[in-house]
Amino acid sequence: MDESYKTTEEITNENVNFETRLNLAPLLEHVNTIKKEIETVIVGQHKMIDQLLVSILSNGHVLLEGVPGVAKTITAKLLAKTLNIDFSRIQFTPDLMPSDILGTSIFNLKNSEFEFKKGPIFSNLILIDEINRAPAKTQAALFEVMEERQITIDGSAYQLDAPFLVIATQNPIEQEGTYRLPEAQLDRFLFKITIDYPKLNEEILIIQREHSLQNHGKLEAVKTVLSGSEIKEYQALVKQIRVEQNLLEYIARIVVNTRENAFLYLGASPRASIAILNAAKGFAAIRGRDFVTPEDIKEAAIPVLQHRVIVTPEREMEGITSSEIIKQIIETVEIPR
Image 1 (cartoon, rainbow, N blue to C red):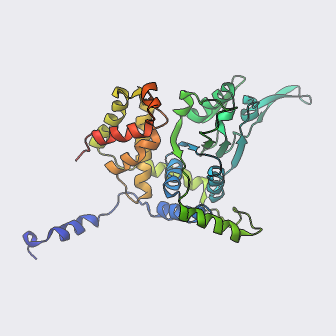
Image 2 (image 1 turned 180 degrees about the vertical axis):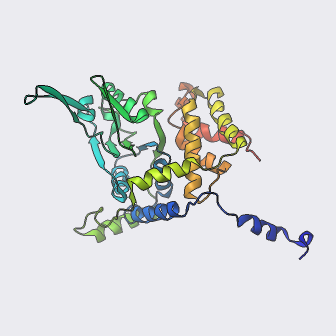
Image 3 (image 1 turned 135 degrees about the horizontal axis):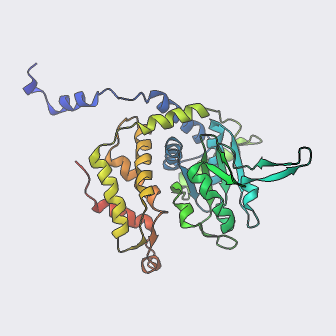
């Protein structure tokens, strides 16, 4: 057949049937299996589940924010159950000390030497419940471990085993007995995921599932899907996903716009640019692509940026949120062609 007589549809179909440079099939299979396992308990919240999976693939920490009872803690537990890695849960309280998290040196009478007893932070997946209930001194103890995956105590550095991921929860409504998270700590979270109330049909399904459980626990039927070595393998694979130069510039323009926006008192840091890049690669991977598109960047931008910027007091009093401003910025920045 003469090439000049091919229809647009035929040419488009030929372009769609491309060979991917990276073999993402095993990753996709595991991602879909984890989704199915979590969705046996969690109703709806598909975007949240996608974002949690992207955070694992991007090796980033997550802050889950929502009112009590919207399944923040149970979601983190379900995710941990699907992963064959060490899991620790730390309940943050106002009297919690840094040594309760990191560990402490104890004098051993047998050999007359100090021995370091590791705290619960020495695990692979850490669930920090109600992270904003601990005081600033305890929050500061997380700075090094979240960024560098190590802790320094008594002049000795202790490396944490990979993968190392923190999932923290907080309640945005109740302020009594809570402490605002420092900006330096917020900047260490890849995503801030806001969990809303379920819709009516989802609420009905939640009640039906709870009724059908009878004496069975929510976590009992969830199976382990992914090992620690596979997680590290997929994290390395995701880093190889292709990003064109014009898309790198697109990320930079979005972030720089947050620093120049009149509605924002504080813009995003260069760490935010890197976070958008890594998250966009993760979104591309779970969609089965070995290259990033502008849509991946847009999908990553709001959960990456909304907790890293500060709205001016005047706009905050008007009820304007950081996510709304970021949406406006994304709409104004020209999409690369």
